[in-house]
Length: 195
Image (cartoon, rainbow, N blue to C red; front, side):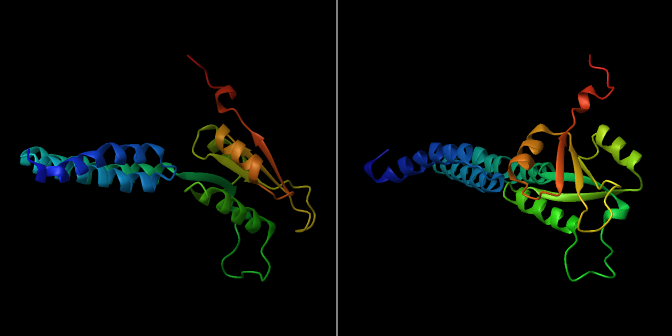
C-alpha cells in the first residue's frame, strides 16, 4: 500500500465502529439499519482489497438476505397479544363521543408498548373459558376481562392476567389507570408437567 491508500484505513476503522453501534442500539429497527451499513462497508472493503467474490457474497447474503430475515423476525416478535371477550370490543357502527373505559385501557396499553417498539394486537374470544384456555395454551400474552359486579360504565374495572413476567413488570410500573388490576400468571405451574 502507498500513502494514497489512507481511505482504506478509514473504511477499515468503520467496521468495528459500526459493529459497536449495532450492539448498543436499543431500538431493533435502528440496529437493523446499522447492520445493513456494516454489511455494505464490509462488502466495499472486500471489493477494494481485490476480493470481488467475497464482496458480492457479503452484499447479497450478509446484507440483503440477513436484513430481510431479521426484519421479519423482529416485526413478528414485537407483538403483545391481548385476549378479550367479543362483548368487550366496541361496536364500530355507533362510536360514542366519549371513549369507554375499555378504549382508554387499550389506548394506554398502546402508548406503553409503542415506547418499546411493540404493537398491541387485540384477539377476541367468545367466552371466558376459551379466553382463559388461550392464556394457558400461550396463544395470547395477557387477557383482559371486566368483572360482572360493575353496574355502570363509570364503575367498570378490568382485570388483566399476564403470563409473561417482563410484560407484567412493564405494565405494573407504567399503567396509570386505577380501574385496572394486574395479575401475573405462571403458566408453567398451571397443570403442565415439567420434565
